[in-house]
Amino acid sequence: MEKFLTVRDDVAAAIAAGQPVVALESTVIAHGLPRPLNLQTANAMEAAVREAGAIPATVGVLHGKLVIGLSPEQIAFLSEAESVAKVSRADLAAVLASGMPGATTVAGTMIAAEMAGIRIFATGGIGGVHHGGENSMDISADLTELGRTPVAVVCAGAKAILDLPRTLEVLETFGVPVVGYATKEFPAFYSRESGLQLVHRVDTPEEAAKVMKVQCGSGKRGANEGTKTGILFANPAPRESALPRGEIDAFIVAASRAAETAGVRGKDVTPFLLQEMARLSGGKTLKTNIALLVANATLAGQIAVSYHAHA
Image 1 (cartoon, rainbow, N blue to C red):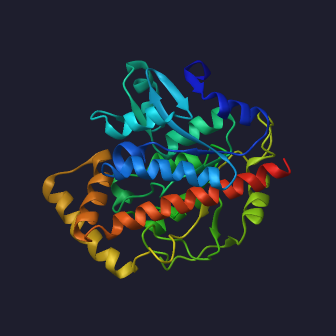
Image 2: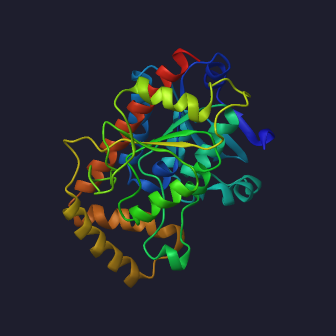
């Protein structure tokens, strides 16, 4: 796959020098947020990583290449293009071969980050087990990727529309540590609370980096270290923008009914539900989504700086 990989010069230089780099996904740009907020948020996330002292590397697929460190012009293109593929592990080869543009999911971005030697990645919320997944087997590839790719992921938990208890069970089965950041409760994306308790907690970027060193290795590219699985740092949405869980649950029920009525299936379900919830909430969920994305980018940058300080 390395012949399909292209890394922006400053990102490649930082990786080679052992400097902190944070990977960022592009699905949120192409599919997750409406225009022009998608481009504004992508730029804000990159700025947050830089302010924390690290280098941002937004990942995407363009012209048959997996690009690590999209340029501002490339990010703008993905934010405006009408036909952009959603790229997880199962889609990567076909999209690269086709030459069509693609936006990487959590799983897709983890693959790219690991190939390039980037150890940490910031996103909004991971995918997980959908309601009824015990029968439908509708389980996100994000969970599988976390179980086999040694990249740390900073997120606000799993998306609230998912079956959160089963999502945590699958992560445990795959040997993925779920570590709360300044919390012992698994955050539910828009809400800081889920009622699901976590075993592990850290309270500073330095503590997070220590756990990451054990889980993912020293940070030296090519080093055969770590436990060969990812790690999830669960960072609750900022308190000032988080929404009550009861309010979110009501929106989820209404949005799920709308999706069923519209016959929405497969990869279209999550973006449909998020858009419908934004409409039902009068834009409140959208504001929370943007706030937690930027907050996660900041925290990932801080952890990356601490992780590489003693690599």
